[in-house]
Image 1 (tube, rainbow, N blue to C red):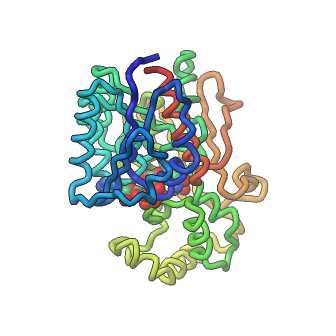
Image 2: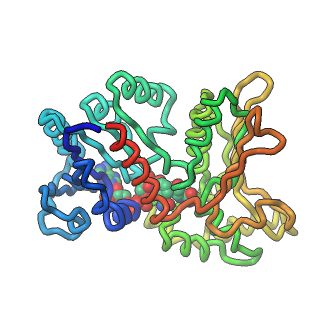
Length: 358
Ligand SMILES: NC(=O)C1=CN([C@@H]2O[C@H](COP(=O)(O)OP(=O)(O)OC[C@H]3O[C@@H](n4cnc5c(N)ncnc54)[C@H](O)[C@@H]3O)[C@@H](O)[C@H]2O)C=CC1
Ligand SMILES: N[C@@H](CC=O)C(=O)O
């Protein structure tokens, strides 16, 4: 174990950030000498001293305004690294601006744990760059919660590959929020009633159109495809969006104010395409065909009462992983696919995993 102390810098103090700070930040075993030294959010940051209780930082008086919080964070990473401290950044935002900093932060000496899916689902060029830099600078990048929240999906895929057992395909209901919504929705309901309830529990993305539009599931498919060693881009994934065109360009606030269009459009789609279906599930899949090129899709499908998808508890995701060995009898992983508690737990697991390796 490293004799250097570790500074933890947390970007994002929203639903997931607060859950980690209140439940886990104060529980890091002393032997790791790891301290939360900074919290950063949109236009604000605070530095915490050694005696601060990290969870109290959320309500502390010393937050400073900045119109360039990420430059402040760059500086803090630089300063701690030059004091020969280890630095771990927790990215608990959904921000592309934050995700675009990873290459620089790894080069500057930081390790990264993220719930943010941006980097894992960015262009192959950027993704490969991050991987290359983390190898070159011997920095860790952990992103378990980007798929299935706290469920161990990426590690299950890695273990198959370590056992020389190549992946053939992955399918499932990858979205905790869409699982929660569609396991309870019944034809005739206002779908937005369930959407609001899912958002109130912290299951959706900050902008729920990322869930409803299929982007969140597509990103998860891409992250898993890359974990399996396959080359794929986000725009190669066929995705069904449940967001009407009329709501796609609105701000997130405006979207919430116009849910009647969302309900009306969904009802029209249901009547037109699946008027007799009683249950739906948003399913995604990625597999390689004979030319070894991965193909991925995500869409809302009608399901029969006998389908394995029909009996998922609301909010549960499931992942069906087929490999050479686990083929006709695939590897199944199922459990809560979203939520502040399980996601914060997954972040903490990734953090402790890095601390143990320093
Ligand atoms: N809700 C869930 O169950 C899960 C969420 N995640 C991921 O966790 C991440 C965070 O989600 P939430 O906590 O719900 O979001 P949120 O909207 O509640 O909080 C986001 C935080 O990021 C900060 N932020 C945004 N842009 C920033 C920037 N440019 N610079 C500095 N700070 C910035 C905001 O000020 C806020 O504190 C998302 O990427 C989401 O996909 C991952 C797994 C499960
Ligand atoms: N919004 C996501 C949260 C986890 O990634 C989901 O619904 O699964």
